[in-house]
View (cartoon, rainbow, N blue to C red):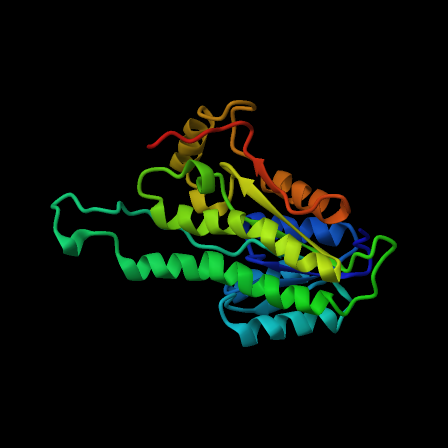
Length: 258
């Protein structure tokens, strides 16, 4: 699938995995719409690649449609990459055994709403926009890449909400690809392991913490680079025979319970 002179939409594009993806797509000649709630970072990233910033809550249908309209106004939309998401850690049962200390149900709903429902919202609307494209020689009209996590399969203690949301993204991959095959849109999913993003911070103690985390990785014994994630995104978008797959990108790590 060709990226040159097409438009692409990347959620969570203002930092981390999303920012690296924005830059990789722009380097391949795509016109990128950076979707994020952080206006300052999003505007800066978009400006640096001659792209467009769209402030958007992925769970808000009207805002997503507006971001898609910004993309299709530039060029036909052929790529959607979902990187937006939030994390949370809390055990299911509190130490004191009281009902009041059980996992916060509103927080659980929020994690599911943003990570899973938000991802699907962008998928359903993005694919609808792609359906208007003129198909290529394979009959393809576009491709979607979603971001889950190895926590979808190796969820650790306290990750019940986060793992549920990411497991849902893995679970929707095959039926999503089957649904979208009738309009010629492919859908794949990446399960990143430990990737060096701003979530870990930049202080000296953060570097020591990341180095310690890297010791648990099979090989190479380090955190992944956002550019390595972006490279996988590009492969899943451009390789027209990649469809309905959920691919771990984790250097062989398998999380222990804690």
